Image 1: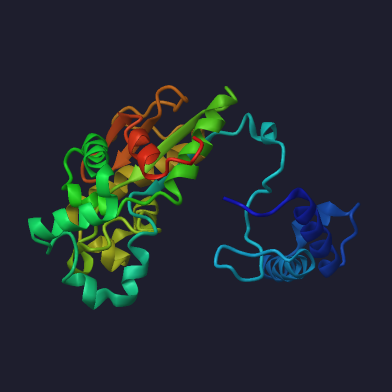
Image 2: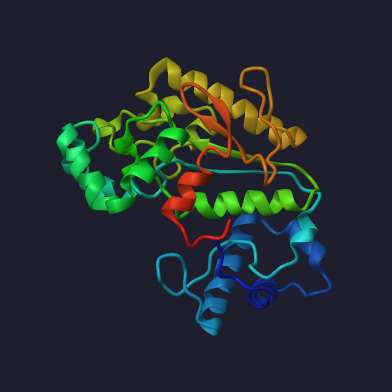
Length: 282
C-alpha cells in the first residue's frame, strides 16, 4: 500500500524544513506556518526526494505519495484505534467512466442471462462454480454477475491491515465495506472509488451519483456520518441506528456492510478474496 521507506520519509522531512527555513531543533515552529506554505514546502520536498531516490507513484510516474512509511515500527500506533474499509467495486468501475455512454447500455443490468454466463465462464474458467458460491455467501442478495466487478486491489490489503492491527491486541480496529449502488448512468458504476464520501460527510444531495438514491441515500448518509463522528470522538463508531459493530479480530473478521440495509457479517468475503487473489497473504 506504500512505497515510501523510513529513509525517504526522513529526507522529505529534512527538505521540507529546509524549504521553510526551519532548523531541525526548531520543529515547534511548524505550528506557526500557514497551511499553504507548509503544503508548498512539502510538495516541493516530495518532488525532490522522488528524484533523488528514483521513486515511482501509483501511476508509474516519478513521485511520492502521502503514505505511512513501509518499514516503520507498527507498535507506535498500538494504542490508536483504526476504522478501515473499501468500496465493493472501488477501482473496477472507475475506468468505465471514460466511456460512460458505452457502459450505460452494457453492464450487469442490461446483460441477458446467456451473456452473464458467458462472461463469468470467460473470466473465471474452471473456478467459476467455486467463486460464484463464495460470492453468494458474501453477498447473498446480489446477482452473481456482480462478482465480475468485485475489487481486490484495495480490499485485500485493507483487510490484511485490519487483521494485523488486531494482532497487536491494543486499540480496537473496525472494518467496513461500502456496498451501495449508485443508479447513475444505468447503474454500471455500483460502489466506485470514493463513492462513500458524500455519505460519510452527510451531503449526498450535493453529489448527483448519491442524490439519485433519494430518501434511502439520505438515511444511509445519516447512519454513516454518525458512525464516523462517533469514531472520531470516541474511537468507537457504534450508535443506535446501525447494528452492533463488533471489534474485528483475526478470528472473527467482523465487517460492517453499508448499504440500504446495514449489516455486520463474520469474515463475509474472506473466502472470496482468497479465491480471487490466491497469492495474497492475509
